[in-house]
Amino acid sequence: MNSTVLPASSTATAPASKAADAAKPTHVRYWILAMIFIVTTVNYADRATLSITGPAMGKEFGFDAVQLGYIFSAFSWAYVMAQLPGGWLLDRFGARRVYGASIFLWSLFTLLQGTIGVWTSAAAAVTTLFALRFILGLAESPAFPANAKVTASWFPTGERGAASAIFNSAQYFAAVVFTPLMAALTHWLGWHAVYFTMGGIGIVLALVWVRFVHSPVKHSAINAAELAHIESGGGLVHMGESGGAITSALPKGQTGFYLRQLLTNRMLLGVYIGQFSINVLTYFFLTWFPVYLVQSRHMSILKAGFMASVPAICGFAGGVLGGFISDGMLRRGFSLTAARKTPIVGGMLLSVSMIMCNYVDSEWLVVGFMALAFFGKGVGALGWAVVADTAPKEVIGLAGSIFNMFGNIAGIVTPIVIGYILATTGSFNGALVFVGLNALVTVLAYLVIVKDIKRIELRHH
Image 1 (cartoon, one colour):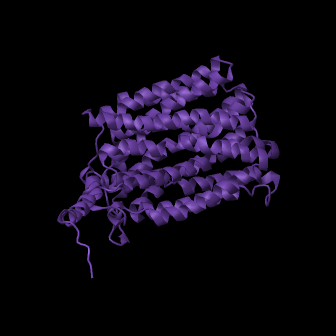
Image 2 (spheres, helix red, strand yellow):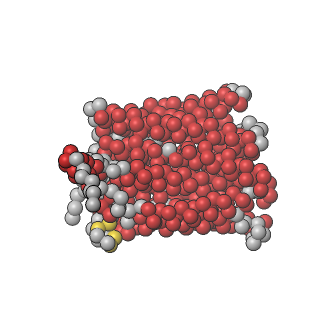
Image 3 (cartoon, helix red, strand yellow):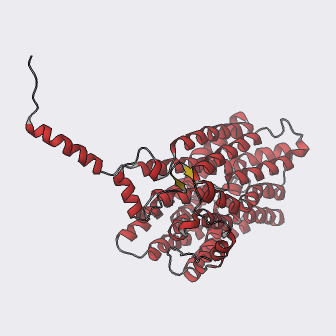
């Protein structure tokens, strides 16, 4: 019997080749980031459903501007109230389980909004819609603190700015993909179809999240080289999980003691103020912007849906660019403070340009100034990277929740203030000034209040 003998060089290099492959880091963290990005895209699309369906629902049920402003704000009342409990749940039970439950619940209540007027009377539509939007806010409350917690676990400090900017830019990508889709569904099938479609997508996504996402130390696809790269660069690789059980990094009975430290730190106070003002722009875009295009610029809802996607594309590009600029500055030797503040300040100064929409009539100039403003907002939206850089490692979920709570108070204030401006003046001009000036508040917060950006060390009892 003949046998084939491998050359000595082949047999010698085979083990070496396997060893070299094992030494190469895997890239599981990028798949985790892609999952966070997809979930956050759906998250923002579900928040924005009412901005697309609002004009049609207003005609059907008789909403006026002030009523619509309060209905827009219902989400944020609950979202803000639930931030601290949501952060506690993340620190206590881990991001994987809490986030999975959150995705499922918010998708369910998105779907239920499509039943308004089917099993309720028209007279009860305002109350029912407010209640369902309120519950949606409760369900979504752990989302961004969970994003920050997962990012802090899966990415070293030098990659965290880009990672945070990418998932944060999902808010614009949601508008690029889903705003035209929801406008088309409203135009062709009626507004009910928007809620049924978005709710169904989210329920499927919740199952995928629970199946795929784990901490770095428990993920079956990661190798030792990638794990070492993450951990040596400052990644908190356990993500609240230890062995097969979920454990809490938050010492029992000390939540209030740590909460006071997080609320009285000067650096964090400046970051909180900055995030509030950034989110004034976010919530204008999520609530009144399509209505502005329809009512003030006299576009059809279908055209407004497509035109709104142009600033969203620019916001997405700016969001990704801001993260890469920040991390690039870090690699070139700039301090963490300079690397984070430079894109934030420069980007928010660009955002003031939206006020120029009050002085032009051409549609392309209006969309152009809005695109520039949202490009700048994207570049400057690095607040979640700052949280991942600065939050005490014991209470990342709680710190992220406080940050998100302050930021999303803007979701209460912005739609209501704009509703009253419209009711009083009959014009969006004052609303655009209100939103644009908040960009300057962010600049002042980071230049005057926030000093050095660094991780906080908690005092212990």
